[in-house]
Length: 184
Image 1 (cartoon, rainbow, N blue to C red):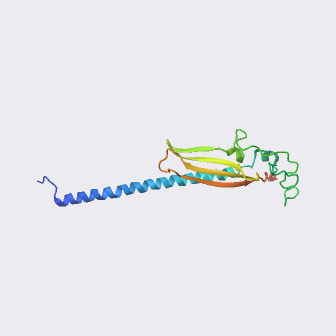
Image 2 (tube, rainbow, N blue to C red):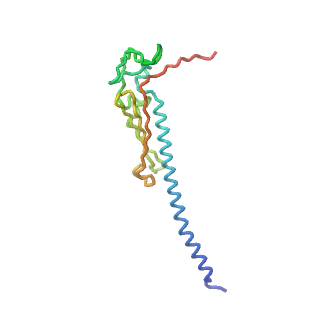
Image 3 (tube, rainbow, N blue to C red):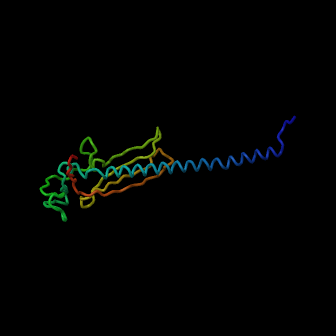
């Protein structure tokens, strides 16, 4: 009947414990790093999708009404644009001007309605990152610069300091009215 461990059994036990204490922290570190990378990829994808959605909206609230190129502070048009043709998008007789940046009504139905848009993204109770949209005019006021920024939430230590932005310039081109007919 044995009452103690042999020297070989003790050495094997110490080796097993040593392997566990050297490998397990590396596994935990690698999984935390992979989790942080996954959150950053999710933030970038979400920002990319958001800028794609905003860029497909009409340029201004009034382009939906007139369907024409709008007069802005630096561009007053009283004719067809260069290269334009009869019936093309134009600003002839356009008395409408661009609306101010920011939401115009209840719906976010044009580009500048998203100026100042902030969406915090959470999973469960954990706050992951924020998406912020800003819309500004370029110097000529014929382009609206859309910027979507994904930035780590201050409470998220895994993405600490992460911030990335996407940019898109949308031109003042009016809306295309497509003639459509019912199939017979």
